[in-house]
Length: 56
Image (cartoon, rainbow, N blue to C red):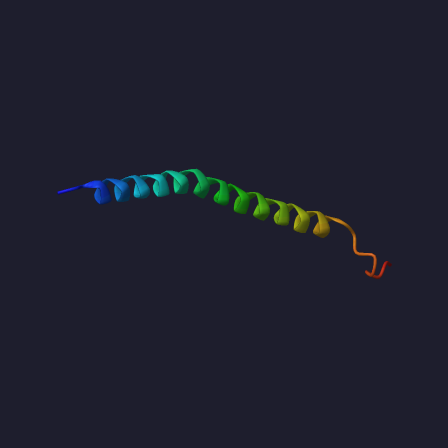
């Protein structure tokens, strides 16, 4: 009886989980950075006076 298939499957699962542990935080960091950039752009646009606004 050979356990090669089980061992190979166990190593494959281990590698998949290891890769996910490496990639998942980077995806989350990219999402957070994008959200912060969009928020900063929105705040900067809100702070600038509107050129179309009527002045008294």
